[in-house]
Structure formats: structure tokens, C-alpha cells
Length: 235
Image (tube, rainbow, N blue to C red; front, side, top):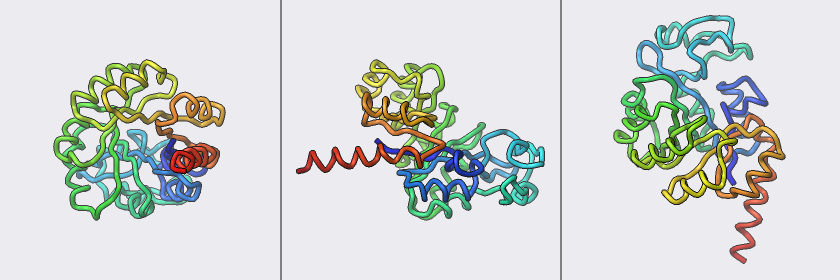
């Protein structure tokens, strides 16, 4: 079972910041996830919400402001609002899971990733139509359809669009949804698993999934168990 840091590692540092990305890596994640949005001039910055009001003392709507006016916003942890380039540099060789917010980002993200140095990136989104457009532009990059309440719709959508998998709220994962996704050769990520007992329960039932967590430092027992099983199978 792989462990993915959520919004960097939101339980250890301010979400979607360079600090949180580095905290996730230090915690030993298999990959680090963060959210991106387009600015008015079609550039990407890290932010979960439409505005920066929850992570700073400013109230800008990201899609309405150009990068030069928003990238110098000081966040609550003292950092400046990071760009996608800042995030990828902070991640280094650690695989990244990029959650895209809003609309109209497919072409811009495909062009950005195509021009960037080779990285191990996965793109996920609730906007399945836009994700489908991105998948056609960048077929080599893994894509996952995110779903909160309708797992069967997400599985069908993912199969039709040739996505790599589905990323669903952990409480809608059950033996039936797991079986259907695996039957269609789709990988599974679940979010957001922040308690050890839930992680252990999921591991016992669905050891081949990946989990996203705010607290990846509490989930390392899952990776140790996975490595032990792999070692045992080879011996």
C-alpha cells in the first residue's frame, strides 16, 4: 500500500506550501499531492480554494488576478504563494500527484508538463471532462478521476476516458466498488485517511490501493508491512 501526502502534509505544515511538501517527503511518503489553480494570465499556483483568504490575510480570487500580483502574497506560515514550478522543485525526485481545480486548465497543464524536465507526475481532478481533455493531450501521464459520492459513475467515466484509475473518498470504497474498478483494470487511490485504525482496516481489505493522508508520518507502518510482504513473496 502506497502512502501519499495530502496537500503536501497538511497535518504537519500549512497546506499546499513548500514547507508542507518538504514535510511530506521527510515523513517518507511514496508521493506528494497538492492542488493547483490557474491565474488570470494562465499560470499555475498552489491553492485548494478559489481565493487565498484561508491561507493568508488577502482575499484575491486566483482566476481573476495575474501571477505578478498574486505570487508575492505572504501566507500564514511566512512563505510566498508557491507556483507549480516552486512545488516541483521542492518535490525533487519524489513523485507528485497534481490535483487540478477549476476549468480550462487541460491545455495549459499539458504544455507546462511537456516543457518541464522529466518528472514522475500524476494528474487527478473532480472535473472529469477537463481531465479527459488533458488525457488526450498527455496520454503518457497517469490520470485519476476523483469522486466523492458516486463511485460507479467515476469508474465508468474513468474506463471510457482511458484514465489510469479513480480517486475516491475512502468511505465509498467497498468490496463491490473495489472489484468493479479492478475488473476494469483501474488503479485506486482513496482520500483522506488520517487515522491509523482506518488505514489498517483498509490495508487488511484492500492492500493494493494507495491512500492519501494529512498525517503521512503516522502511516509508515503500512509501507513497512507492504515491503515485508513483497520480501516474503520473493524468498
